[in-house]
Amino acid sequence: MPFLNSGGLPTCYELTGREGPVLVLSNSLGTNFSMWDPQMPQMEQRFRILRYDTRGHGRSSVTPGDYSIEQLGRDLLGLLDTLGMEHVNFCGLSMGGMIGIWLGVHAPERLLRLVLCNTAARIGTKEMWNARIATVRKDGMKSVAAAVIERWFTPEFRAASPKKVAQAQWMLENSPAEGYAASCAAIRDMDQRDTVGRITAPTLVIHGGKDPVTPAADTEFLVSRIPGAASVELNAAHLSNVEQPEAFTEAVISFLSR
Image (cartoon, rainbow, N blue to C red):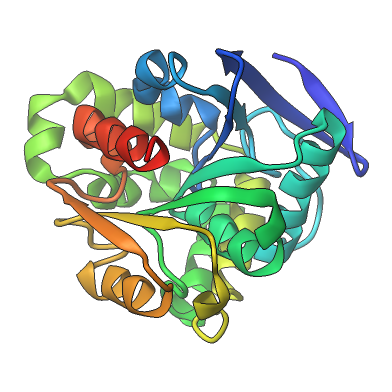
């Protein structure tokens, strides 16, 4: 995979698909850009796809200290600048969606359309995130993996698709522990409830009807605050693009092709 040193941060990325509008895909906490594999066959036929590993994830650099959502958003802007991409469509899931909210507020001139998936303007409590950070730093990724997988997928999907679940768990367990903990801190400190209404890009919010991490109330908040935002509910938990790949991909392509 190619790397770019953008703003001093070695970033692993992949650029594929047809020439035309660029679609950036931003990964969730504890994954890497391969989480988007189910979407690639169809999306590559319509868009130029930029996938990248967020700071602290996959093959991108794991820098010391707690991260912030602003920092992760500026990482992407630096990558886009280095690649010469002025305007892009953006689709992010969970942490990737939080980055998307930040971009929509602070870099609206860079966005054509915005897709926010299984995400929220604020998630969890400081106590919850501090406990997870302490556990991961002490005992590693396997200490939290089983509980995370239960939130990522519904019981029905875990029973019917054990191979896909095992692949996701392997990706999570092999995520850099320090990068994961530093990104947990970014989510812990994020509160975009007062700014999300400043998003002006056409926006689609995708959520899972069985998502325990970002339930329906979080989606309703985003849709009520973002002018003109539309929403789609999928029969899935948190990683809706993996659990319902066809419906997810269709929703994104339909929205971006309007």
